[in-house]
Image (cartoon, rainbow, N blue to C red; front, side, top):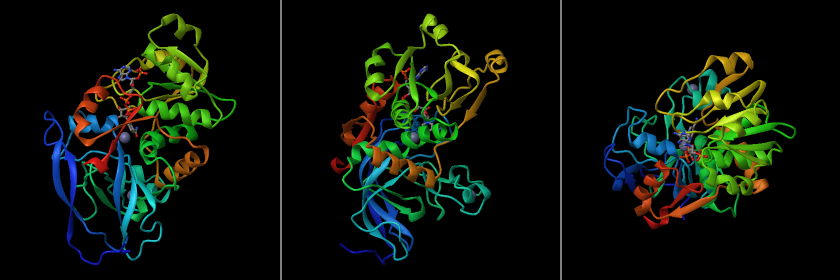
Length: 355
Ligand code: NAP
Ligand code: ZN
Ligand code: ZN
C-alpha cells in the first residue's frame, strides 16, 4: 500500500446525506481532497449516530447547510498519509471526533481547548474546513483530516464499539474529570441514552458511585448492568424527594426540554450540574434550588484533542466501550426514527463497509 499520495486530485467518497430537514437521508457521492503533507486518509469502518446528527439534519439548531453528511464518531483504518505526518501510519486504526481543524493560535487552542477556538473552529460536518470547502462527516466511505485532529486507537479493539467514544465518550469524560468524579464522589447521570450510558461506564470506571436519573423505568436493569449503583425514576416524586441532596455532580445529557430544577434538588450543597444535552428549546432555571443550595450549573462542549486521546487511552486500558446496535447504512433513517423516540440501547453504529 502506498505511504502517501502525491497527486492533488480528488477522490470520490460514497456517503449518506441529508438534502433537506424534512427528507430522509439518501445515498450520495462527493469529492474529498487527496491528503496534503499533513493529512491522513481514513477508511471509515464504523460511525456512531449521535443525537446531535439528528438535531443538525432536522435543522433544530440552525443554520444547517445542505447536503449534510452527518457523523462525528468515526473509527477506521489509515489508508494514506502525507509526507509530514508523524502521528499514524498506513494500516493503523484511527478515529475522528467532532472537530477537524482549528486556528491553533488562539489562547483556547494553545490551552488544549480547541473546541472553544476563537479563530474559527471546523466541525466535522455542517462547517467549513481551512481550505474553504464544506466539511462532511462520517456516514461515508473515507475521510481526509489534518493529523492534529486524528486520534490514535489501540490495536485489536472492537471499532464498532470504540466509534461512539469519539463524541459520547469525550463529552461525558470531560465534565466528569473537570468536576472531580472519583472514588468517594457521587455522580448522577441524567438521561440514559448514548451519552448517558457512556457517562455511567466512565464514572464507574473512575471509581465514583453512580446513580442513573432516568425518565424510563424500563432502563433500570440496564443501568445496573452498565455499572450504576442506583437508579432513580425522575417522574417518581417520592424517589426524587428521598434522594434530595445526595449527589456531588450531575451530568445532564437530556436532548430535550426537561425539569432542571428537579435535578438540582438532588445535588448536595455547592454541587454542580454539568449540562451537555443540547435542547433546541430553552430550559427553565428556577432560582431557589440554585441559590438555596449554593449550586452551580455549568456547560460543557465535547473535549479538546489531548483530552480525547487521554479518554481513548483510558478506555483501551480499562476496556470501556459503548453498547451498540450495528446497522447497515440503508437502516439510518429507521435508526433516526428510533433515536427520536428514545428507542436505542445505547448507540447505533453504522457499518460503512456495507455502503
Ligand atoms: P440520546 O441517545 O437520544 O439520549 C438522550 C436521553 O435523554 C434519552 O435516552 C432519554 O433518556 C432522555 N430524554 C430525551 N428526551 C427527553 C425529554 N424531552 N425529557 C426528558 N428526558 C429525555 O441522545 P445523545 O446522543 O445521548 O445526546 C444527548 C444530547 O446531548 C443531545 O441533545 C445532543 O445533541 C447533545 N450532545 C452534546 C454534546 C456536547 O458537547 N455538549 C455532545 C454530544 C451530544 P431516559 O430515557 O433515560 O430519560
Ligand atoms: Zn455527538
Ligand atoms: Zn483557536
